[in-house]
Image (cartoon, helix red, strand yellow):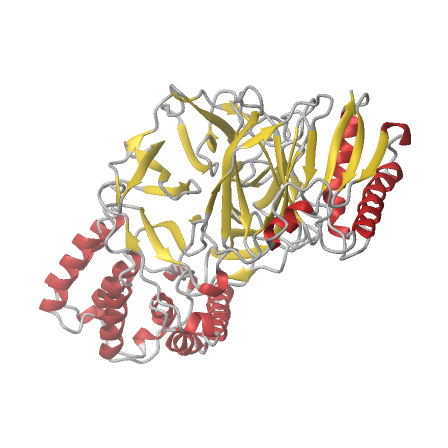
Length: 638
């Protein structure tokens, strides 16, 4: 008896007697039957299009050839042409609905592929009513039924109901007749690096730049990064200077696939370096994602100690430049299934990843979690249909504004294999919009670039939001979630620390700040204004938001044990001079008292209030008055 063999579910899982029916395979036209066998041979070689053409010729000869319709449907399903797959399943059903019964499962899968989850649920329910199904078939049917019920539940949410998903192919400059995948972007969204499968087996990195509205012709990355080995699944730092990637079967590798790093130099990308034993094991490590401040590295691994097959882990960059022992992200994210493809957004708080262990639409779905104030992760949120489908979803990256995503897919308009596409992210699963600040840290006198640590702290929570190390010439780039006010600090031994207050809570997103930071060498009589010291009106009590900056002052005093300073207090000219003198003196003393409470020797500290006698701005404007109300650090000796 002829039986359709090309479906999402192997027909051998089905074990039940054929009921009374109208269609009799024995009576199929012999010429049509020969064409059918020929078509199956083509399909077994992967040539589904030719198989479909031959089968259509067969049903032209015998219009009641149900097995031919079923095989056409199965082949269209393999090509993800769900419309035609559904059409031909229904043609087979019209020939004999009883004979069609055991095909309700693959029929339901193709209906779900089109987002027709209610129809898919009806079909799989019909499948599950068949008598004498074996255990594997019942398990497969119940799995799909659970997925369709989940999809119907999700479809009632407003964000999904009103969402238009229209992916756009990046075109011939980026995509080719082979597969392109794993896109990675710089913060300005102008540089795209991706993996391309070359010569049908080797993986190399290619890059392209956005000029106006067009991507340049993609070229292999220059330098020593590409080889005849497999390099892929990469993460590009937001400044475009680091590339962390997966290298498989490298001679010096610790396991089947390890993580490596390469740095951009004037001569191109440097020779890759293995990230070492704290990250790589004898197991499989892959799919890295570097945080925007380059301090956290998320990745997937099958190492022991996880919760399932592949888990997501994180390692932190230590002050000495080494990576910490990797830590599992825990059971809130990892399951008994497989989690992979992490992507940490430029906001440094929103993490996307794939999972087949969490409830989804079928296969690997994309999920989102957000980092809370105490570094804990929220519960995973499924990104929903049609971002997630019945197929296996892979990596995606999202622009800094949170509005646009890039991912790989083999959609109908693919140039060949996987292509890179872009689409608009649904509002309710977008990351936090970010601002970004870039510039250079320099010596105030020589203008020479200074390698330094640049730190951003949330003034309200006192939580460090971002901390980056400049490059050797002092250049830095920091991303900032919008809706907050920040303390901006730069600390370097031998210099007064830089402090700036960024009231960004009301600023619009997607803005760029260019700030060059001039550090003052610690010399006698050098003065630094503490920009983030706050008091209530007419009060000498320090506001809690001041502690972030005062702790930086404590750090500077500890790093420079010979340094003696004086705290100077100043006011504007509002009120009586005597009151202002008293207020400024009391505020300066409050700062000194705080430093002493943190273990700084009182002998190294003095204070002086000057009231309104030393203005630095015009007291006739509110802006000028605010500048005159200040707390200063003056170097006495070192």
